[in-house]
Amino acid sequence: MMKILIGIFLAVSAVNSYGAINYFSDANNGYSQSGVSNVSKYYKPIELNKGIKQNLEYLKPSEKVELIYRNDIHQGINYVLSSGYRLVGHSEFLDRTLADSVFIAQAKKVGAQRVLIHKQGVTQSSYGVEDDLNNLNHGYHYYAAFFVKDNFFKEPNALGLSFGDIPLEKTKLYQRNTGAYVFSVIQNSRAYTSNILVEDVITAINDKKVLKREDVNQIKDAELKKSKTLNFTITRIVNNEPREVQIPVSFN
Image 1 (cartoon, rainbow, N blue to C red):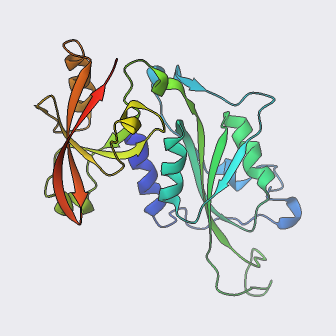
Image 2: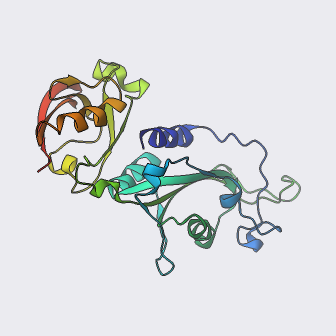
């Protein structure tokens, strides 16, 4: 999950990299003459291993797809992840105003219950046929992320966190390169009720140093064989200064 989340942030922050893209006509409700939308055309699935896939719960035939529009894509991603969902794919493209049905169709195709959509205008004025070969009136940059329910966080020893390396731009703030940076906390999970927060950095578990993200689960699983309460050493930013705090997490 850590690699996935990092991939999302990179995709969100990147300038559109697809070059010349065909804009579909509003008359076709977001679909080209071939019947394929840009949402589908530029959809990129996330590579997930078998262990992750076995915990995923996909959209049921009678279930409705929830569309979530957000101006702040980072906050939107954290909101969906904290509700116990996992990213399974995303799509980035340019197009005219699209109907909700286009996103819902792709969600049903991949089994996603939630779609996070970021829409931003990329034209300053209207264009006519003479000015734009695609007959574009108003253009938008779209980023759509597709999520499914993840039951992994219901496992007996699950922490309820998604974490990764400390973002490069934050290493000076935390005054460190090592540790596991918390991207999201699942509501009502062990981490949530223990008051581990988003943007905390896990630096040790039971005094065993956490140098990289892979260390968290390795140390946690090893220490749980000795005790059902683990002490997490956290670096937290308080009043713009890094401060070390101790947080006990019970697995009883």
